Amino acid sequence: MRLRDEEKTVTWDSARKRSRPNRRLLLLLLALPFLLGSLGAAPTAPTAHADELSEARARQSQLKKQIAAQQRQIARLNGLQRDLSNDIAATKSELKSINADLVAVKKRITRMKKKIEEVKAAYAALLERGAELDAELTKLQAEEAAAAASLADRKAELAQRIRSAYDTDRTSLLETFLSGGSFTDILAEASYMIDVGEQDKALAQQIERDQAALEAVHQTVEDTRLETEKLRVETAAQKKKLDKAMRDLKREQKKLRALERAAERELARQKAAYEKMAKNKKGLKKAIARAQASQRALAKRIDKIIAAQRARGNIPSQYNGSFRWPLVGRISGEFGCSSYPGYAPGYGCAHFHNGIDIVAAYGTPVRAAGKGTVVYVGWNYADGADPAWIVVIAHSSSLQTWYAHMQPKAPVSVGQHVSAGQVIGYEGNTGNSTGAHLHWMVEMNGTWKNPRLFL
Image 1 (spheres, one colour):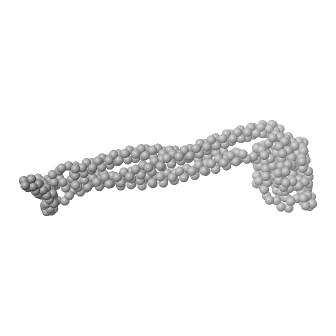
Image 2: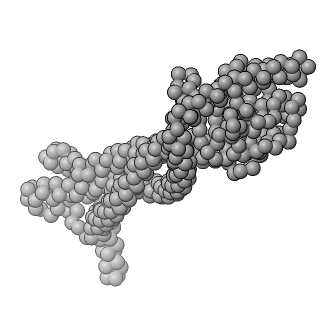
Image 3: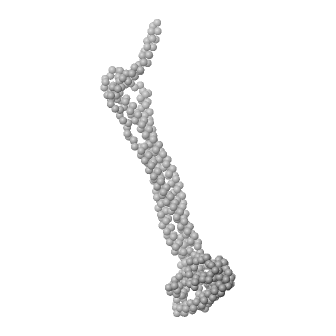
């Protein structure tokens, strides 16, 4: 019987204890308006590091602008490389030409040197940008690591605060109220518990912001790493192009120097021959006068031959106005005014060269500049005692080409029709010549013209 009474007592106590939280909760709800009114407004969330996310996003935007500027710089460098490559190709083609304009090639090479310096400067700026990206990447990686560590610390702090709030046996606010303590103690305890809750909430919000900022920083790191790799690949490609352009330029400069030296040797040889001839000016003037008279006589004879050929229908009625070079070689004398004393005056010059001199190996085949009819093959007695062997081709009633100083043999004959490129003779050294070469002339309407105008 006593045992049952004890069991009832235990059951009653347990039930009372189980019902106590409900009563405490009711009392706490009744007391909270008073307590909250006494404590005032809860503290606001901390604002520390509030701008980290905005700063990370601003950095992402700035990186995009820098990448766009970098792409424009690469596009400009590619354009410079293309221009340089085209100039080098044009220079190669010109130097391979049978009659290269060395002055023009030299000017083009000078321009290419300046363009290479411009490419070098753009390439150096690209290298500098690569170094800046490497430094930026290192800095961003350090910032990402620091942000990750800070986020981990905040998460650990929040976890510790949650464990302290819910895992320890802390005296509740209601128990403090019911324990009979002073009203001041109750206010202090309530204020502490409310502060702890607001701080936990602020810390959680800060963790959320830190997480977003970390993700933005991480994305910036990845973008920077990707752009760094792309820039490294592009820089290597640009370096390869630049090195090739510099090698090509050096080769073309070497070719140009060789041609210039050959031209200087030829000019020196001609100058020596001119000086030798100039010693006997009186005899030279008489020889020039005789040559002019003979030239006029020969021209009249050629005109009669052309008229006869035209009457027989052997002269082409139309001419397309273009010729080809009759010989592959080096130009030793251009059409126009000359310092060579052996040339007669004309066109306002004291010494006028009425054709183009082309130098090649002795015996090189000479070809017709265009289709036409052979009207003269033989010695040019207008030269005086030492005549040159010439071939004259009529391309129309008013257009002829002359080929002088050839060997005294010809695979063509007068009246024969020839096509452009057909062999009409062989380079020689006959007549008043300082060395084996072809003197090529173009006569139109009785006047000597620059052969280059018909090429």
